[in-house]
Every structure is written in structure tokens, then in C-alpha cells.
Image 1 (tube, one colour):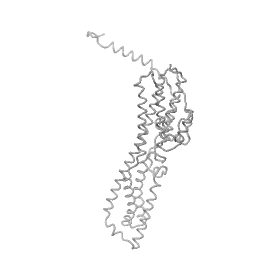
Image 2: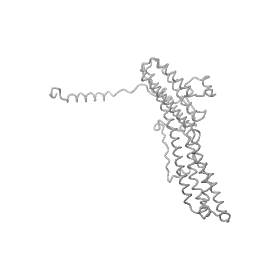
Image 3: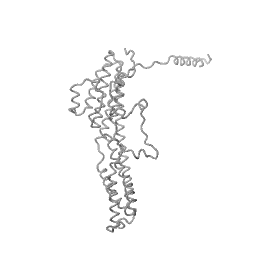
Image 4: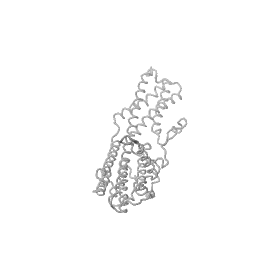
Length: 373
């Protein structure tokens, strides 16, 4: 009853927004001709002078303030108004402070980087599990005793619901209302206006409920047995768990006491390091350069940690969730008609070779009575 189903392209049905098309690729990098960038260049100059998605703009003002403090301290010292030799008789104590601050900054960067990867991991689990559940639903439906038109209607409806489900999840994580999805796969109506008006507190739960109802009605008393059918629900639930874990990362802020202590020590560094530089470096220019370079490194680490501790949002270093949605929709659209539902047949010639090899092997085995054939 499945019949011959030829692969036909359906990408034209989904017009990718020009703003988001090609932003990122997850599952088919080779076919899409996309390679992850390698941050490596001659002497690292390209990375150093790239301003897009950098944190230079956030760390630069603090370093400028530190330089001004250094210049003011040098002028006051040379004018005889203050004597920094009385304050800093030896630099050992200040070295202990900078070492401790450096350790704390690296520790915070590690925690922030872990949160960033946790957000990426849970998003990938959500998308891959939901896509796997969708594939199973379409594959199991191929054995339904329905007409070809009903097969197509089911595929269009179920892909539209999964696209909407994924879009609602990305909307919750990004707080954006312009997340695309396969709108032409479902009939518009009051339900869609409710989504746009935010009358629903949880759009993900609503779409999950619709999918459960649709799958339960479609596969009730199905040819494929219930234990196998249950895999769809298991993968759907695993994807929902990934979504809630991603929301947990988004809604749980970095501990304030830790951030407060780091901010305090960074402020102390901004005020005191220029005084140390003014005390031990005689030249105005060299003191300013050392002050700016040394403090800039600490400030950059602080800003990097602040940037990575929240992986969801609209910043340049945040996860490209809109691009993930576009790539998900492209893969979902493929299941409607751009794939074949007839597996390739086994090679007849290779089967004959295997059969002859097995017959030859049986003839060479000794008989049970101890005689050879």
C-alpha cells in the first residue's frame, strides 16, 4: 500500500528569511558547504583586530580611567604633593593580591564557559530528540492503512506542529517574537492569534499537547505495535526535558555574591594598580602603557565571563538560536517530500556471491560420520 514515492524537493515551500538564512548550520555542514571558523591567523592579528562580537568596548573605559589615575599620581608625586614610597615600600603584597584576583577571574570564566556549553548541550538535545520523534512518526505512518493524500496531510500537519513547537521553545529562550516557523503547513485561525497575543502562558506545553493528541489518534490500534510506537513519546519527552534544562540555565542567574566580590576586586585593581605603576615606573609614557595593558587584560577576562554566563539572548556571543530554528525547519521540510520512502533493494549480484560462498563452505566441511565430501 506504500507504493512508489519519489524524492521531490520541497525547500521552495519555505522562504528562508534573508536575515537568518545561512547564519548557522548544525546537522549537514558538508552538504551546506559550511565550516566552523578556526580562530587562527598569522600572529593572531585577525582575531586581535576583529571588533565584531568582541568585549573591547566594555573593558576599554575602565583601562582609560586607570591610565588617568596613573598620570594624576605621577604628577602629584613629581610635584611633591604625595609620596608613593611611603605607601608601597615593597611590591610583594600587591603581587599576592593580583595573583589571587587572577585565579578568581579564571575560575569565574570556567564557570561561565560551563554555563554556555550547558545551554548549547540542552538546546541540541531538545532539537535532535524532537526531530527524531518526528522522523519516527512519519516512518510509522507509512504503514497506516490510509490513502496517499491522507499520508501527505499527516506529514504536512505534523511537520508544521513540530516546527511550531521548536519555534515556541526558541521564543522562550530568546524573548524574540520574530522566530520563523513553517506557517504555511497549518491553517491559520484564532489559535494563532492567541500565540501572537501571548494569551497562552506556555506555548510549548500547548503544542506538545496537540502533538500528543494527534499521535494518539493516528496510531491507535496501529499495525506497528505499541511498544515501538512508544518510542515517539519517549523522544518527545526527552526533547522537552532538554528544553526545560535550557530554561533552567536561562532563568538561574550567576550567584550575585560571587559576581559582587569579583566586581569589587576589579574596582580595587582599577584604582590601585595605577598607583603601583606610578611608584615603580619613572617615565610617564611607560607607566601609562603598563597600566593600560595590565588592567585591560583583567577587565577583558571579567567581561568575557559576563558575556558567557548567559548563553541566551541577542548579544553577538550568544547562541544563534534563530539560525538553529531555520536549520531545523529546513530539515523538517525535507521530510514532507524531499526524501524517498522506498528503501534501496539489496544487490542481487552480491547476494548470489554470498550464496555461492556459503554453498562452497558447506561442501568443504567434514560430514558427521568423519568422511569428507
